Picture (tube, rainbow, N blue to C red):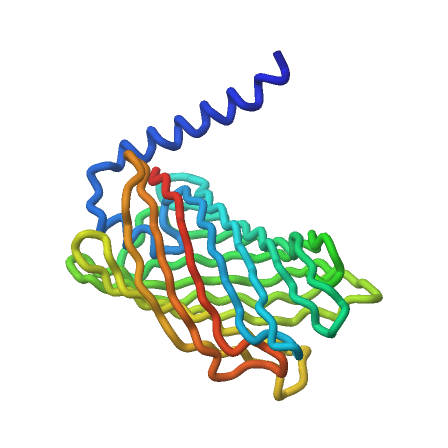
Length: 271
């Protein structure tokens, strides 16, 4: 009896999620696209984002990071939501010197929680905290310190307009010591700009700009430029947000990658 409980529960929960999606079937594909582009939207989703970094490390190898990023909103009351986002990075790390060999496993998990108005007027915003957990399965895949810091997002979705634009930012500092791992002081800023066509196709640019404040001055910044295209389609009644884009790093640390190919599939369960 106990062995069959977990699969039965998972099946029931998945059915509830599908029912939630069906309840929002009246949304157009353009409206679903805009909902997917809102980091603090009232939307349960599971994005799988794959980032392939080219010419990484002193041997100019290829690094691959698959981010599994479940998003779950918590309804506090009629005025406020908490939007939670967890990032589980599966990292393929190439060898950094001949004979080292490559490494694959889980890197450090990040958990964010945004307090956001349930019925925003004008600008949409969210503020909260981000935590980094040392979940790496190998020392070369992450940092063994715990990290904590603030995070915020602000964006604009104009009614009747095809544009969605905004910016997400955070900074993480280490809050626990570890003899073998360096202190953490890193910033992430992600501006995003989307133009939505009728039918669920959209153009997007969302470069992930990072700064490692612990690095030497010439190795602090990673600044990419680029963009891509996305499309909303349906698997039965389940909406899926697909996207592909490419970014060239105009600024990168020594041995950082020259450019990145990003592909994403996001399973959407609108509430």
